[in-house]
Length: 359
Image 1 (cartoon, rainbow, N blue to C red):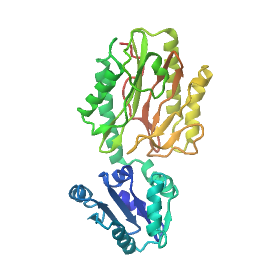
Image 2 (image 1 turned 180 degrees about the vertical axis):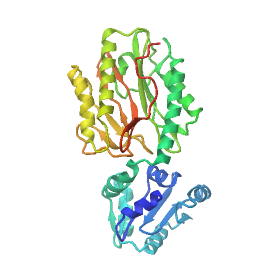
Image 3 (image 1 turned 120 degrees about the horizontal axis):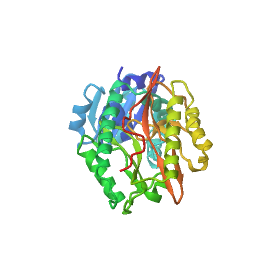
Image 4 (image 1 turned 45 degrees about the horizontal axis):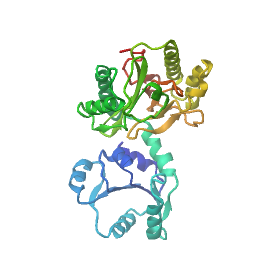
């Protein structure tokens, strides 16, 4: 069953989905355009795009959608014709992604004839239900992306030395990934050093690495629209006893989360497993973010390992495991892998070394 057919199975009689976001279009079509509309009814589907993309779209979406058509000058009239041909009564929109301006435009044109749903039903109930469970093809793309990411880590170990800047490290990572199989970067690469490692999402700067301090790198590659995500903290020179102690606490916390994760386990319990290790070691106040997040065609998607999460781990989930400790003015440590939740076991998709590397 194709992804579009899976969505059609979730739609009620008379419902149809209008998918505008690039992320969700790439999920269903394996194709992305800056101007595209995927319309999925209970029985039919159509993709609409303009002249810049129509030839490529017809090639890439052949066999995926029932029809790929050129956007007309009178786009509203074209949509009205499609809506009518699909015999729909209710149209679901990506409520969390459609701007208020665009929603008002749709409401003005079609609100009198159709029930327009701009709630989070399509986004968070239907689409995320599909996107959470990665099939073998999706998992393969994530593994390919992760392979590029891991190769970049091996490369960067030989590049880092005292005197090199955070920006130089980040650019070297980016260049390596983009020239060794990545279609794009998963996100803006994070490289921080010394006291900057206490900033979980610090921005690479011209600060130059010194001996006896940590360097934290959070980076990832994207392959065929699917992302990878990995963080490693290394030391340049010899670490202090406190640095080693904090690093090992984070490593134990990450291992605890991995051991707790399983199909059917509440996500908040996985977060708690990691958080308890850090709290019991006396560093609870220095761990503020969630333990992990889903990864797929977006770098952050459902589910989430957090104290407030209401999600349950499900077979097919790909979720990061990334606890951290961040002591302002001193240093921070984060270690991140990606986990795949299987029906009977959990697999770590990240093979890179996690013991403290000192260079």
